[in-house]
Image 1 (cartoon, rainbow, N blue to C red):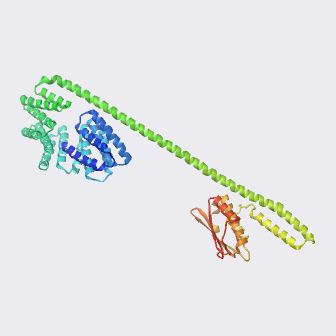
Image 2 (spheres, rainbow, N blue to C red):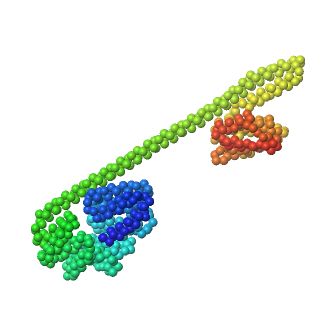
Image 3 (cartoon, helix red, strand yellow):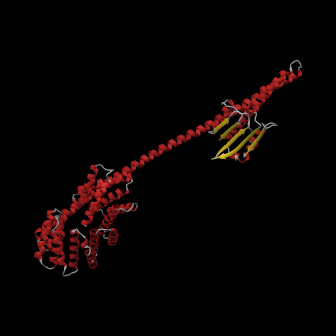
Length: 544
């Protein structure tokens, strides 16, 4: 499996250089290199814990950045740490999450190799959980993706180990023989040595006579390595071979060599295994050490797992606290937005209500003034005129002046009198406009009846009535128009009124009449525009 590790470390270096260059400082990249190597080559539980925290923190950052490739990378190493610490369920979950992230990415050389590494890791997880069929399934998925023969040897070797555990020795042998046909394409002699050594061990279990040459060939290749730990499996298997042939002298010799390698690399598990081999071959000098190592190893394993479990608990606790704080922030932000929205809504409602009340007050005031003008001033003027008619001493011109005053007073009263909205509004507007039609002035309306006036508010109808009234009065007083065209329409839920006349026109200034029109329209958030040039008539556009 060494080849797969070395190949992955190469791709890892490329990945760090090109994919993390922007997001990390040199110190961060150095930490990344250190912790990735510590997972494979450092036995200290303390270093594994530090590596776990590093990749967990890095995973959180990459989630925020939305970097799925980097997240899969983090999850791969978290899964490896969980596997190494014996947390197989957690290791499985992390690997599956990483694979799901890779499914969302385009296939590249790096993502392909990361997928192979994850499938290989899942195979080992399922082997430890004794889910052998699932393990072989993952190994076969990896084989489909592999392009290098060295990596294929790793997978074939792993498959043979599962078949060996299931006591399917003939299938295991055939798997390794298939792998051996790739040797001519493989440069990694240590990977070849593993296959040959494993093949020799399986032949031994099958009681085949040609097992020993395979075991010696594997040892010969392993002696070329500078890594002493590579020698241990060969010494162990040779000891087992000579035990099976009842050659206790050779069995003990190789067991002692295995024991010395275990001491050299300071591996408790190897020392325990080698001590067991020496005892099996009749060397009981290490019996006390064997039982002491067994207790120490189990105790160290328990302590290591307990510490790591506590570390994972604290990490989860911290994540939950962070999530709760985030949820609280979001809740308070939501409450703040809600309060602001409610306050804004109340403001607009009150503002609209206030405008409506003001419009109603204006309308009531106009109506009251109209009534007083009619009841008090106009009636008094009428009585004065009656008296003057009965008295011939007054000149006729005084009567004419009084009649003019009376007519103007009556007009003011009519212009500001209450509007009866009981009838359909299109009829009411028609009646209004007809009042200004005579022998010299034609009033033409278009599409008045097409407006759904029953859906229009009372306030808006009142404003429309008054505005048209102001325009007609303006036309009558100043325009000298003979044709007036008023077109009604609807655009984006707004009523549109286009007014045109052919009057004499003039350069307009906002006098009281047009100012009143504009103020009324603006009071209901409408738009009023007008144009007029000398001898070009008058045009107005209303949108409410």
